[in-house]
Image (tube, rainbow over all chains, first blue to last red):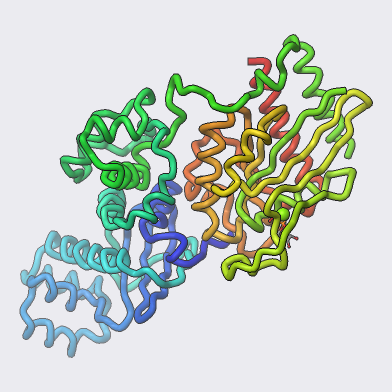
Length: 273
Length: 176
Ligand SMILES: Nc1nc2c(ncn2[C@@H]2O[C@H](COP(=O)(O)OP(=O)(O)O)[C@@H](O)[C@H]2O)c(=O)[nH]1
Ligand SMILES: [Mg+2]
């Protein structure tokens, strides 16, 4: 079913978070004010990216990464119109111009560059085409999204936006147990590590901020990026004083059997509707 | 005679009134007032106070359904609403991701302060551009144990399913 919307309401970081956690395969198309981009994922990992009005071919990517010279790039552009990136890559490797690592790293840099530019787009529509793979002539890679997400979340600086994203600082945090994610492998800042060390269902976000000597704004930003990367989740703090009457109060003075009887009568009645 | 209530909350236009109307034995009493703010021109009028529906169980028990938008400016109502409350339902329009952020904030407020069971209803699943329920779970940051149901507020069976799911969770909480 449809996965589409507007970047004003749903950011690139949130989309990457969705793709990452749902381990999606397919192509995300983002149409911005002047350009459009296509980002392809395989099982929640980045596989490929391209942006309109620019040369996304391997020759251009290698030249941008200073792996080949402008002259070599020009020759390739002229001669390699008809051959695929996969063939070109093999040819260049076989001819000893580049090695496989150069190719992969250059592509990674190119894709990252496209994503980083997307982070700055505030206007645009997006839609996700499930199952759509990269163009067959291109070289796909496999890159984890967590670091990209953390990087993208750091850019969300505006106070109002952060406040919307994280309205309640009196909630606590706990680590999610997601297999395959090793927190040691993430590029976190000193600030982020400091927060991580205080995470515990007993500590509210506000308390963590105090302990880490951060302003509300700073703690919000850090917590937001950890949330987006799927590393932590919000929980009701242990031992929090409940401010509103709960089920106990609604059911006050009733035995357990009477309470169950009441709910069962409700269920029975609704079934009949 | 005992009355209990369930609260239906969620962003503007998510289907709260529709949901209550579908199962209420009385015409839903909406305290509505025209809102002319540019952002809210989607509909002619919007519920600013609340909807009120009723299901009579027997001569000793009545269930009231209260619909409330749950925005910041209605904060003062939480306390009134939660009196006699069994649980709450958060309605979300699955076709409008621009409202997910607000829905999440309503949900987080409710979760933190209303210590009763709840379910989240991904409404308008009959529409073509409805988001997939499991995508919504991630976008709304709901843990796997939070009940998130696909719903169509216009459809009686669907509304019944949501209500029964909530009541089942209430039963589980009572039985421990
Ligand atoms: N297609 C469809 N439309 C719905 C559904 N639920 C509500 N609507 C429509 O969405 C609009 C807003 O619903 P309403 O109940 O007034 O929203 P409220 O502001 O949350 O009370 C109305 O036009 C409803 O008829 C649904 O499940 N499917
Ligand atoms: Mg309404």
